Image (cartoon, rainbow, N blue to C red; front, top):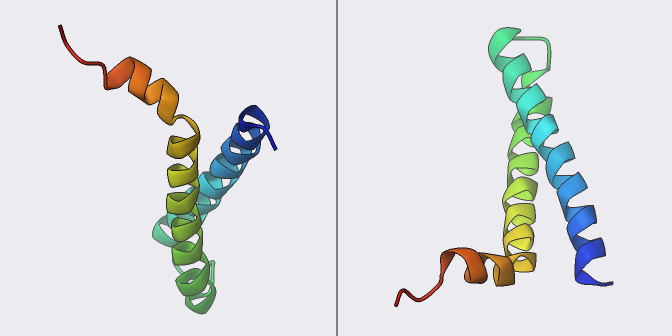
Length: 75
């Protein structure tokens, strides 16, 4: 799989996981009891771990761009 295709898939997954975390967190905060705590206790941390993993993949796929734009040597 080439880098661009991997980035497209990673970006879509990042969006979906972020939305899942946001919805579960906001629902638990604004409407306590709507999501059973046993479900929230499993789903919210798992999606958090998935988000961190996807961010690491995203950064590694974009590392050349980061190096070129932010890690330049100053003259």
